[in-house]
Length: 263
Ligand SMILES: [Zn+2]
Ligand SMILES: [Zn+2]
Picture (cartoon, rainbow, N blue to C red):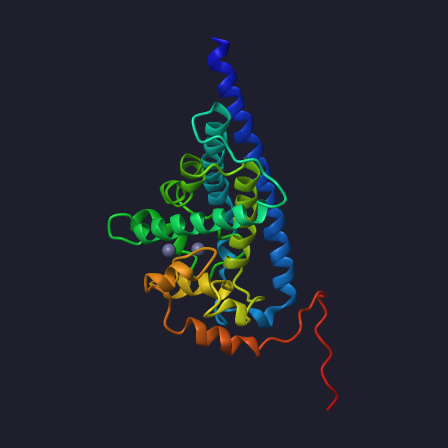
């Protein structure tokens, strides 16, 4: 009897820890992002739109979706623990960064493919909920249906059967995804720069914001790379990032309005 209960308890302990930390990160990142956005209104991407009214609906849905994402992570770690997956590589100072980057590229490829699938006629009904947030906010990232999340976040489980990623790399990738998603949905731009446009594979908040407002382009998560390879990058993405670069005044960290220059 205990032979069955022990693994179950181990799985539940992993799931509980991953879920608890993810929910905490969701609120810490969301509150920090909202605080920063309130002080920098001129950085709003969609000038005439504010998605704030959906905040509570998004938070409620996120509590469900984060449980699905956490289950995917917990399954992956549990499979490694039980010896069902590849024995993880030993993490060292030398391989940490290359493994983290590889984990990001593999995660992004999965997300890209799943996201394209979710935009097909057959699956779109599961993804439509996420697109109700036309002007996304810091609370929108995890506002997804169960099927949407299960598909787009399945890589946390699948990866361990393909590549022996150390558990810490899997967790670091997930924590990074959470902050990346918060910035990517914040609706405010802080990263418009040459590193966010061609030939750089990196992107800025406008990339996914444009996916929400224009719908047919920019399916990637971490990089613009797969969208460029498969021809789904918005034709004006690079030029509009370039246009934003000179537009923004310095960052404000105080609620007071910046002093007006004397007449
Ligand atoms: Zn989409
Ligand atoms: Zn989104």
